[in-house]
Amino acid sequence: MIEQIQKANLFKSLHISGNPLILYNIWDVGGAKALQESGARAIATSSWSVAASHGYDDGEKLPFNLVIENSKRISSNVKLPVTIDLEGGYGKTPTELIKTVKKIIEAGAIGINFEDQIVGHKILYSIEEQSKRIKAVRQAAEQTSIPIFMNARTDLFLMKSDPNETDIEHAICRAAAYADAGADGFFVPGLKETKHIEKLCKYSPIPINIMILPTMISLSRLAELGVSRISYGPSPYHQVMDFLKRAAVSLHLQHEKIE
Image (cartoon, rainbow, N blue to C red; front, side):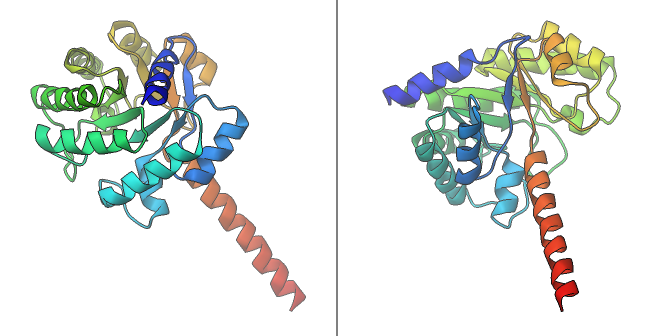
């Protein structure tokens, strides 16, 4: 437990505005070990990638027992802090959430991503409802004595292709409410406009996590805007699978020439 607490505290300290933690999301032990050998400071999973690697769709379609087993294998095979993408927490009520979060902590995690979209629906929990859910997650962590880093994710900008200032103000309100409820970070996948990122970083009471996209500005520019954490989501999985496909096609073509 002492080691897990130390990892949790270390992970939290790595979230620095202007010097962001870079997380190249993986899905299994092999990827975690490769990143550790590369000099990574922490390990983070992507729920989409973990689900796909097991043959499931994202959206809590992957059975929770497989989430736990995968988390245990990753955490026990690396020395780095491990944060797990827990989607909606595999539970709707505070009681259900307390049970699932305790299990993910027991599996060795020191952090989680916890989103505010209602699983299976393209709508968000209200700020009040999600705040209650965040409080339940924090309660679970306190009961285990592990100060997990709760990265509260909002899917607001995945639903808004062209967000306006009202949407940014809404996001700032969510960030403040989630912080009050016990969240440690605020994850805003889909947000990519420079001015919006800068404003959110300025007014959010907790560190901002941006998911990098191919068309976005550079890592250094995101750092200048005040971002504290940059993650890659499912893109590493797509890149690895694309490489595998290209390599296989090349081999097939060579075989056809031999024949």
